[in-house]
Image: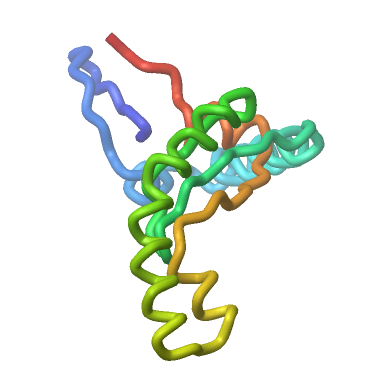
Length: 127
């Protein structure tokens, strides 16, 4: 979130829209051009993998690219109980296999830019 400083040195965080409203037309053009360059550079970087452990439509864990084994262990911990319940239901009254699959925990893959990986998914922890 942008931060503004008054003439007395006091700082205040403001939303992006409020910050943009304080800019002159030249400042907005400059900011637009700078952001376009940063976006282009970020999109040119290699993409990273995020392993997402999901239970139905809910994601219950996100794991870094190198932590695929942790993601697999998480999936194994949560898989058996829902599988046993769903399998018993399926045997009793068969239904679509795609519906069956969607009811079970799974690992989904998200591919993101390095910038998104570092800032949105796994930001550095601040003390």
